[in-house]
Image 1 (cartoon, one colour):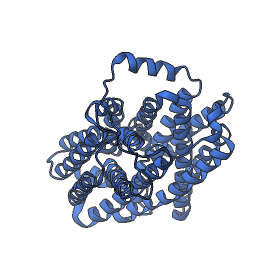
Image 2 (cartoon, rainbow, N blue to C red; image 1 turned 45 degrees about the vertical axis):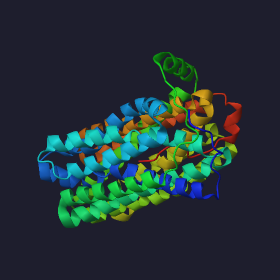
Image 3 (cartoon, helix red, strand yellow; image 1 turned 180 degrees about the vertical axis):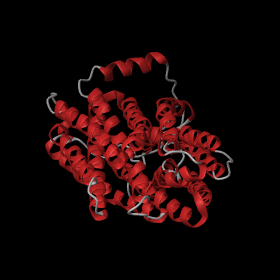
Image 4 (cartoon, rainbow, N blue to C red; image 1 turned 30 degrees about the vertical axis):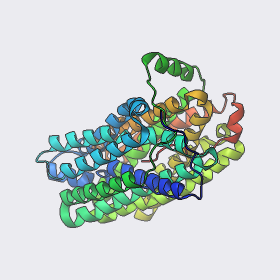
Length: 412
């Protein structure tokens, strides 16, 4: 058992190191996870595959990651949080670099699958690492930097790889991303303080099943999980096929211009904070439906022909999704009690499975009916999420729901 040192506090050199490390972890994780999303049209052309098959370059990363998330926490219980996060970041970065040189579509998908498995060790462990090492009053600040890093990484990674792919081709974009994230992974290794609050423990099937049983008996959690499955699937589908829509006539946007659309993630950063604060004041039951309805309105607006209206629609949809995600993730944390870690893993499982499964199914809508078909598919999913939000509003709140803290889970 490790020697217990005083928890890390805000303002200390150790906290500054940990804060920078968590920022780096979030940045690298989500840059690597979604690096192929803006280049889907280029991959489709290079390997002569359709839009639905091209989307597997994203889905075969997020899907395996979702499954591995359920196991990564238990592995870190035995091996340590910091060591698992370091190994995950190094392996995923190296695999991304390798993917730039593979000779076939099948080989590229195989490397993307392995990247997803490797990355599972970061989002599943980050919250536990911070909670063990940092004093309670400073946990929010440290996790906020991880979440900020995830947003910046998701946006900057897509922008960077788009610009590089436009100039050097998709292989050059992936190679540059792999090298950059290897550097960031090494930076995390050097900065992250050694674990002082970690004590190894063994998880068995009995304790796992007991926690799962307690979570299943909660009347709200299953609806939250189902809603985030639909909403995340809708969000990823929107960005997956917006590239195909805007790359074609009459818009004819370049790869770099398509990547610039991801600047709209800034809207999500702002909205998640604002809606999180609103939920803190009014409670998640009264607020979850609001960003979900905004998401639906933005999606419908993208059916307009003028490019500025499409961009505004995507911006509104982005703000709505991140607002709903912020409320839902913190809601899970508040309701889960002693099973918070397991509840968070299940939330992330449904979150990324929605991305994987529905993000690829959306390709069938694209193939049959183009952009209107994609929007019809997404709208149907969001209406389902909105119905679940209304159902959740009728469930009796827990006492701690009145002091909900938003933004405790990773973003795409």
